Length: 175
Image (cartoon, rainbow, N blue to C red):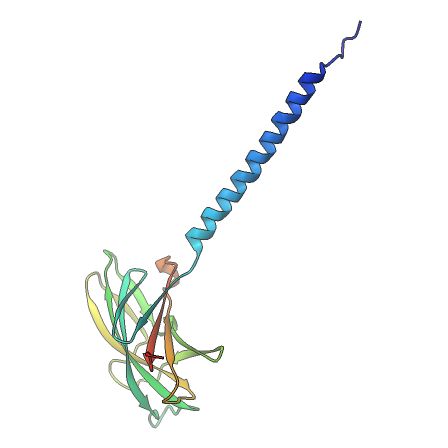
């Protein structure tokens, strides 16, 4: 008499159940990974100068304001490219806007905004109240060429938990 006898069809059933469980776990992990990827994927929105674009809880309109050579205290290495920023908080809570959210990418080089107190509208850090819009300016020290196309990248503040990033063409946008 055998006490440890396991019928052959029973071992096949256990193997099939194990295989189904392993496949179920693998498919679940893949589904969760795809969900996390799509939730955290950066959403790039491209617009032209003056067009409104929403990044996080703020609606921006960025315009090219020209170039300048600085003032007595602050001189550029190249040329200051000045942009105008109209920002409106479209959320119910106040939110922060700062010059660190804006930069120009040109020939794979990143140019950060430069603060220099060139006007009373120069952007440093500003709290945006709900439903209110403000007008500010900032500039970038870049080797400016009137024939080239320049784009300003607007990213959200860390606290704004948005995956939207705007790319605003400010010069020669019809190319």
